[in-house]
Length: 293
Image (cartoon, rainbow, N blue to C red; front, side, top):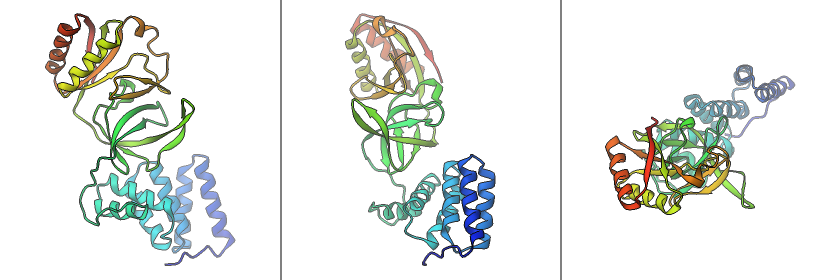
């Protein structure tokens, strides 16, 4: 159906006020005004689309989907609304609706009610983008879902193998070595993993010893990360299979004498076994082994 534009200055002014309230952080009044507008002008798509935008920002997916559907009913040409609809349907596991919405954005998925689970490769993901950002590596399994492959630092509350919902387009504001880096922002955790996070110090100055432990963890099916030099905005090349993005001054000069590393495992015994093998092969020791969560 063709979009009907507002007919009165009153409606236009109410919409401008709603946008301004939202810009100032007054979501309550922004929502209140948008709902007033849809009562006065029920076939105008703009307030529905803006409500969709507001609820998407609050990760409230049921109202996001509801208002996206209403907005699309009156204006099927708004790409942002289709994105909100796709994200909401993905978060709610409404796979048929999600596939329909993603297809409007250029994908070519079958129109069936089955989970989208693909292999779209490794991507950088920024956890907690609005509070304590940490960029980790993750396997993208759909247009807006990924599984964390790095071991996030404890302050993030995230775990190795968490399933996270991503914003649909990468944020390209990061510059690394003179090149823009497309990073997907995390919107929320969809499913927490059961993997436990362990931290310890390797008493060695050698990168090769770190590689030995990384390879042993890989062979044992465990997660591994090198937290030495850990930071949140600069990249440090760790084990070749996993990259983290760091702030250089969290652990001081620790990397010159030892390495702070993390292991993800299901059981304590799995970690102890791999560390025993590492000691035998490297002829080095470790200390301060701790299960963080």
